[in-house]
Image (cartoon, rainbow, N blue to C red; front, side, top):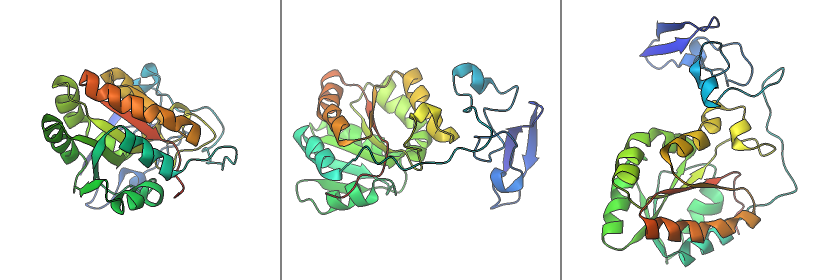
Length: 237
C-alpha cells in the first residue's frame, strides 16, 4: 500500500506500508485532534485548513462526554420515515444505529430491508426504486458515506436523483457540533455535503426528528439528495 502523507514539517512524503498495516499503526502524527493519522489537517502546509477543516484547538486529544440533557429514540425516527412514504431501507450495518434503528427496521413488516455488501451499491438501487415510484432510505455510517462520494456525485447530484441518506456519526462527541469534532472524518462530513450542495440535518435528539419527513418529501419533490446525520446512538423504543 502506498501512503501519501504530510510530515510534521508540512511537506508531502510517500511511505510504503506492509500489507495489513495502517498509516496510524506505522507512524502516528503529533498534532492533537488528528486521531493519530498521518494525513492530518492540523499539520502546517495542509490545505484542508483553508477549507475550514482545520483541527480543533486544545492541548490534547478530545474525549467524548456523555450528554444527559438530550435523548434520541429510534421509534420516532422510524415513524417519521414511514410517514414520508419510505418502503425500502438499504443498509450496510452501522454500529451507531444498529440497536435503535436497524434491528427494529428488520423486524418491521411495513419496511423492506435490503442489505448490501458496499455502501455505494445503495445509490443505484435507490435510483432504480425512485424510477418505479418507490421511496428508499439509505442507512449507513459516515465512513460509508465518504466511501460513496463518487456515486453520490454521479448519481444523486449530476443525475438529480432523490437519494435519502441517514448517516450514523460513529464515535462523535455529543458535547460539540460535528464540525468541531476531534475526529477528522466526522469533521469533514458537513463541509463535503455543503460543497456538493446537498441539504443535511443533524438529528441529535427527539426534538430534531421533525426535520425527517419534510426533508424526504422535499428530496422526492425536487429530485435532489438529502442527508440526515444521526448524532448519537438512538435508544430502542
